[in-house]
Amino acid sequence: MFSANGAFIGYRGTSLEITNEREAEERLRLSERMMAVGQLTAGIAHDFNNILAVIRGNAELLPLAETQDSQDRSIEDIVAAVRRGAELTSHLLSFGRVQRLSPETIDIGEFLDRQSTLLQRTLGEDFRVDVDLPDRPVRVLADPHQLEDAVLNLAINARDAAGSGGGLSINTSVQRVALPTGLAGPDSRAVEFVTISFQDNGPGIPSEIQERIFEPFFTTKSTGEGSGLGLSMVYGFAHQSGGFIEVDSTSGTGTKIDLHLPRSSQNPTSKPSIDMEKLEEIGAGMTALLVEDNPALREVTKRQLELLGFDVTDVEDGGAAIAALDESRSFDFFLLDIVLPGDIDGVYVANVALEKQPDASILFCTGFAGTGNNLVRQEALPGAVLAKPFSIDQISEEIQKTLGHRKSKNGVGC
Image 1: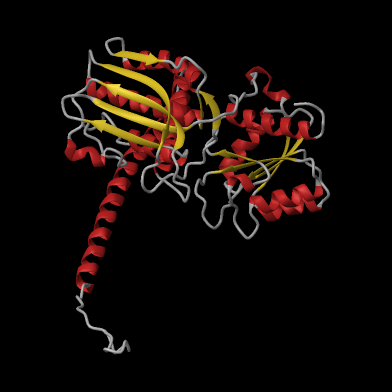
Image 2 (image 1 turned 180 degrees about the vertical axis):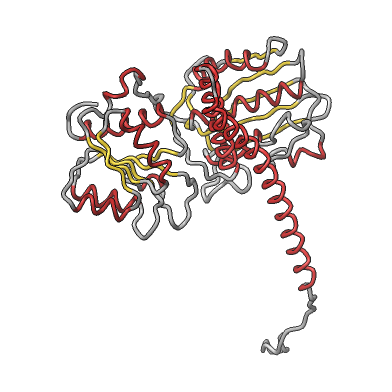
């Protein structure tokens, strides 16, 4: 308020005490978060307990097997269970947008052409799959393995919705799309995306559950028919890749899901070929330092490296690794766990190693996927990152890339 001559004399207004209401809202939000965590925990426990039961049961049967076929069957079941566990973890991390991705430039036409055969075989002969391929090269930047999982999950959901005799149409388009609220940064101009559209002829998604379809472990399927992780994985993958996902569904008219991924102007990424019969030649005549704090994992990883031809020295922590380097020992290749006990992590070991041996090849491995205070950004690391658990073909591929990169830097060719 001001006086007649313009002097400020004070304030006049009304106030409303809302402390109790705000505290009640916070309690409600906390309760909802706890319910979500409880649902998530129950789903994880259920799926992982099943996986562990398969592994334990087959491991106990191995020494009792009377035939080689019986042993082989148990081993195959163990490997398959481990793969399912890794996929479950990957899906959870994708939903949380902390999965460590390896984006590559992918020609989406070639990709969908390869996938179409797999989709038809997976979805069954009584379900129609029409894939409309682009008539010109269209490329996206995405992790190819995660993209395969996303396409397969969306196709399976369409099949389950439409049922036997139903159909799914997949097509692509390039469009400039305005980023949804929450994704747009300071520069809110439209961004060019490649859109992969999945249109089924099922009954559609009821409006009352459309907001929940991306929640982890939320499913309308009967017990045992679905984990409820498929769509949440696709959601997380899309957002972490710099894209997003949209759903358009009306009861009785089917469902359309648009997966928007950033368009790439680069040429498709080429991969080195791997001859599994010549694995021992990859590291022949080379020395390797393995740093891993888990004894069981260290032992199996050492055996993998030896199978690839390396002469391996293995240690359990960063201090032992630095001691090995201080002994003036020379190593051609380093496989380093990023997070190690004590004050010395794998990144520090790598930097010390490169100071002593600038031409050394570095490959990191980690079971973590986040970017917390104890981790650094992947692009800042002096080497590529291999996610645990990894197979012999995965580690051999990454090692070939790493060694090839070293040769190209030294002018020996790649």
